[in-house]
Image (tube, rainbow, N blue to C red):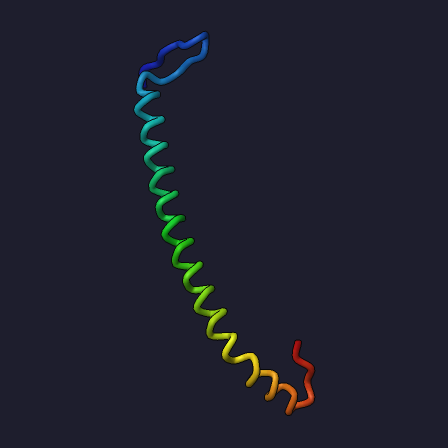
Length: 70
């Protein structure tokens, strides 16, 4: 690895290329995170919708067994 001095600091000559590679990897990670967030948000909405329909039966069953349900 060859080095270059910028303002007295030692840097690799391919510094800009390395920075671009790191930025590309960050962009890929961001895309992955965005996709995961969208899937998780959709899943949570599904769970909440499903749970709404089950609240009353759950309260009834837990009340039948003498347990308190909030």
